[in-house]
Length: 85
Image (spheres, rainbow, N blue to C red):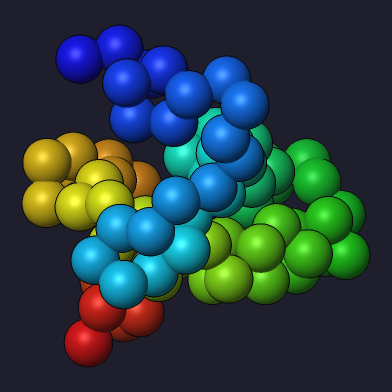
């Protein structure tokens, strides 16, 4: 399966397990995770990244991302796991 099989070029979002997931959600999560984990980042940047991560987690869980992949960083893994509880 290719990316366009999941979301065609002209489609920007779809429903997965009853949750609307926008195209780019996984990429945004990865970018925010990098910011959140960067000790050199400002507290404002890290706080903003954490809010965006938390906002994206329902969609990422609906996709089943964390059923297949495990977050390696313990603190980030705990943040992700707490949202699933």
